Length: 134
Length: 58
Image 1 (cartoon, rainbow over the protein chains, first blue to last red):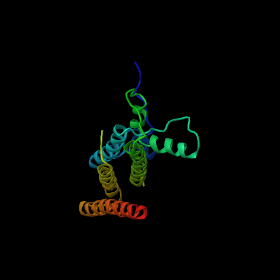
Image 2 (cartoon, one colour):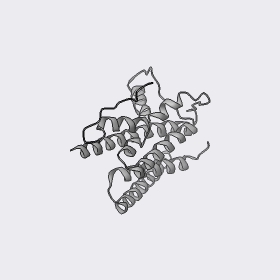
Image 3 (cartoon, rainbow over the protein chains, first blue to last red):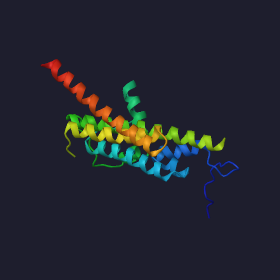
Image 4 (cartoon, each protein chain N blue to C red):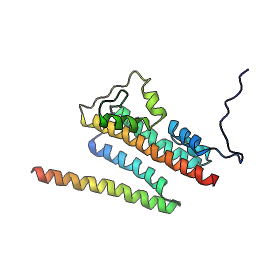
C-alpha cells in the first residue's frame, strides 16, 4: 500500500508560494483555487483556455523543443506558459498548424498571448500566497 | 474555424482586457471600467493604425 505524496506545508496550514505557482502554471487558475479564490480561478482558466483553444482552432503554430534561435526560444517559453494546454496539444494528432493564412498567424499569437497571460496569473498567485504567509 | 481579421481582433481584445482588468484592479466597478477602457483602447488603436496603413499605401 502506497503512502500519499507529501508536499512541504508550513506549520500554519497555508500552502507554500512555489507550490501555488507551480499548480497555477500546470493548470491555469488552479493556484488561485488553492488560495480559495474560485471566481478568479474560473476567469483565468476561461481566459487562457479560450485564447489557447482559439489559437489552436485557427491553425496557430506551437513552438517546441529543440528551438533554433532566440525567437524560437522565446516562443517555446511563452507557449509553455499555458501549462497543461501546451503538453496536451502535443498529444493531439489531429492538430495541424497553417500559418500560410493570416488567421493561422493570428492563432500563433493567440497561443503566445495565452501563455504570457498565464505567467502573469502565476506571478499573481505567488504574490498572494507570499502575502498570506507574512 | 474561420474568423475575419476584425472578429479575431475583437476576441483577442475582449479576452485580454478581461484578464488584465481582473488582474490589476480591486473591486467590481474599478475592474469593469478598466476592462472597458482597455478593450476600447485595443479596438480604437487597431482601427486607427489600420487607417494609417491604408492611407499610407494609397
